[in-house]
Image 1 (cartoon, helix red, strand yellow):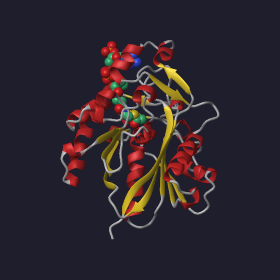
Image 2: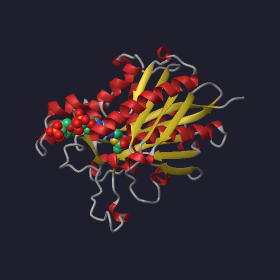
Image 3: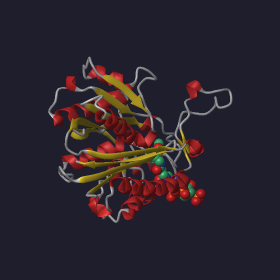
Image 4: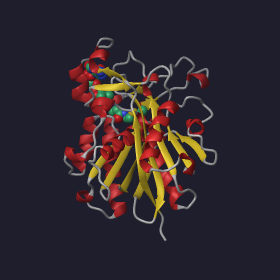
Length: 322
Ligand code: ACO
């Protein structure tokens, strides 16, 4: 019998502290109206000093485990997508495994910047379809606020902190219909974050902050996401009208609206969370999915398209029968 991966639980966590556009405008030359008009963002959550990607991942993961009504010990595999691991090693996934008190499971991190959740989901789906795992926990957790230069108005307005999680289980009915992931390492200069601790003589003076040529990234994102939509529909022999919900990576409402237009979908069929969350990188798609599921918009049996684009460049999609 054919095996599928099915989402059996979702979870999310956003830190308590909120930083508004007004607050940012007091420190850099920008305004609430500029940020909102160009990005769709009004505020973002900022992790407290004692919070880490692992601590946030644990809260989101426990919510997903509760929603799935399983015991943590039943999980076979944990994949955490993060660009802000607590430690270089052990991986955030191993630290999470310890916090969840699971003895017998495999845990590892993946790093695909803002596309991390889609990459992790794609890997999880392969493990389940091949029979190598049954229950897989996928988490995206990010403290972007610590990678941002708060004096750089081109980037500090965009990012926020948070964690999203989903639990997948093997099933004999359709769940994840297909995943599509891609990378192109040609564009490092447009979006990168140095790691000063392992710098060479040549780049030893670079600070460990996000560097982005926003406008060029914007254009690449719109074009690339348009192509991944076509690829996903073609792979499934599906028409645009068959998709019930778009759950996009939350970088910019103008990018999201361009993808919705491409799909001929109204914005009422798009889960948009960035107004109060900003771009939470690998957490954003999972946080948006969690919101859509928990507020009842996304219903069992509906077809949901997840997509993301990020540094690398990396990009991908997942088509799901929820
Ligand atoms: N406030 C006021 N003015 C600003 C600000 C600001 N915060 N930031 C830039 N400007 C100015 C610029 O200096 C420029 O001024 P100039 O014309 O005098 O030179 C002008 O506004 C236009 O700048 P652009 O960069 O062309 O503005 P754009 O409309 O492209 O918006 C933004 C910038 C919001 C960053 C947009 O390009 C964007 O969202 N890019 C994509 C981000 C993204 O998707 N990243 C991928 C995921 S992130 C990851 O993987 C880690």
